[in-house]
Image (cartoon, rainbow, N blue to C red):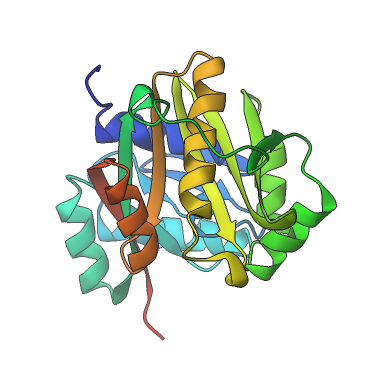
Length: 242
């Protein structure tokens, strides 16, 4: 087993496997044009220590993009976190970053005709994502990924049950948008798709598997912990209260 990637590496992997439509270097900030693809592709991140005037400039720039000012705070950015709190920004969606060695998940064979990798995704996969709130704008994020990628598709009793997305950067595969239909939850579909992602990634030469999970999602956190994945770090967002 090799050492796990550090949290800074996972931040980079996240950026490449779930990319914004455009990125702008703006002095103290990296600004992202998410085009409706969610917080991860729309939040600004700091390039250095920032001041209140830097914050004002970022707010203006994001509003010019038609986006609500939103900031991602990563491990070690306590000063930025305090500045945003003082400016009236509330914490939203704290996230855990999990990782493990690929070999940890490929030692057990999957049940036959249970999990598949398909690209481009099937229409039924889009329907499953829609049911989970992952609409067309977020699926467009998947289309933007330029590296190795695939969609995950799960079936139970010959019926569509789950879908997800996985992409690779720097030998690290990261799972995104894993959704299981309500009637199939609690029946190991999340486990099967996560393990299938590991098998696919290993075939592409990846050494590690990673995933992001909001801390509030107790079921998903329990799943990744049960698979022996390790929390490498966290991040959270801040958005203006009210």
